Structure formats: C-alpha cells, structure tokens
Image 1 (cartoon, rainbow, N blue to C red):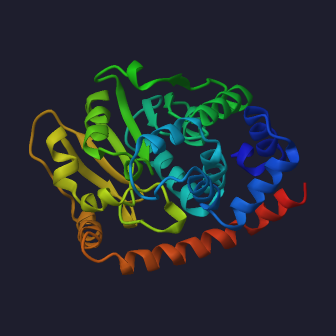
Image 2 (cartoon, rainbow, N blue to C red):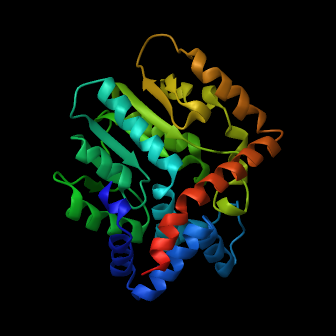
Length: 299
C-alpha cells in the first residue's frame, strides 16, 4: 500500500499524532527498523513493568504509550504481515460477495482496515491505544475512499459482521477466551474469524506477550469450539487460521489445520524449536527492513 511505501508520510504522521519533533521520530523509527521490538521493550523497562506478565500498569501502557506505534508501523512493513494481509484479502474475495461487513480488532495504526476498505469492504476498526487511533484516523482520512468506522468495544453489536480479524492480539490479552467470545458474538451465522496468535513467543522481542497464555498454544477446542467457531482453512503456521461461526451442525477440523495444531500444542511443554524458528523469521524480517531503515535514516 502507498502509505507503507512512503517513509516521509509515516514519519510525518507519527510526529503529528505524538507531538514529537521529526528528528526524534526519525531516530526512533530507524532504531525499530534495525531492531524490531526494541521500542516497546525499552518503554516497558523504563516504566519498571515486568515483561510477559499482566498488570494494571501494562493495561495503562497499552492505552497511553506511543511505543506500539513504532513497533506496529515497522511490523506492517515486514514481509510476513504483508503476505498475511494479502492472503486474507484474496480469501475474502474468493469466498463471498463484496462488500462484506468486516470487524478489525486491535488493528494498531489501521493498515489492515485501510487495505480492506480500499478493497471495497465495509470496515469497522477497533483499537485501545490512543496514539494508534489518532494515527489511524489520519491514515483513513488521507487514503480511504470510504473511511473505516472507528469504534470502541462497547459499540460492537451482536451478529453484525460477516468477518472479523484478530491478528497478533490474543497473546497480549489477559483472557483470550473472553476476547474470542466477544468476536464470535459479533459474527453473523456463517461469518469467519481470521486469527494469528503466536502464544509460544515469549522472548526479548515480544515483551508484552503474556507467559500465562502459552498454555493456549494450539488449543483449538478450548478457545474456539465453545463459541461455535470451527476451523475451515489455514496457512502454514496458522498465519492466519480461519474459523467459521456455525450456530448448528458438526464441529469440523480440516486436515490442513492438524499439522499446525500438533506443532503449536507442543510449544506448551517445549518452546525451543518454536523460538529458533522465530529468530530465523526475525532475521528475514530485518533483512527485508534494511531498505526501509536506510530510507528512515536518510531523512
């Protein structure tokens, strides 16, 4: 997408919504491109919060810190998020008529919402972070022909969406089952939920992932089945996993989801292979971000 290709636009947006000088934003964004996750980790350490553990301080951090803005902008420029977003767009186009009513839950700076709005869908954006919401409003005003609706959690009506996205959110929240329950309730019968949630990722580059949630890695039945959500499709490593809401009928589990369930369930007792794979993917991400990092530094 055009806004992700323009370093100047991203720097100016961050500076505008945070009130920080261009030079400070440029330096922080360049550092995040060189070392993804470092901005949030540094902010967590500065506040004295314990990594990987939920607290009132962490809840306030999600709402008031600008650190996630740098991390999310960088993540959205990386190859894994770009591929996931494009795959979801193709899946929606191939499995129903456009426009569809789509809820995007925890979208940070709003790039997923913008992408789907530009594809013609009727999008509702939900995000708790103050600076991320301000960034998203500016983004939608600049680029979306039909701007996504910016809503709060309390504004989401039951059975009012054909699809919902919850990408890289569940590993951060204190009760993933409660979040899934809210998302399932928002879907109409036959609606689909797209989820990506690396619960196993408890390391220095993911300091706000909660250690208590590792027990839910690969837990299809515990997380989704009680809410009428049945897996219908998935990419490798479930990035993302697609589940359909069925008010009646049998709960299915396609063959393509089984390898992922075995892989991620194993992470509950032994995370070393998963963390090694994550380090390799981080190296690939850093390599792909080199040109963006140089572009930021050159400002």
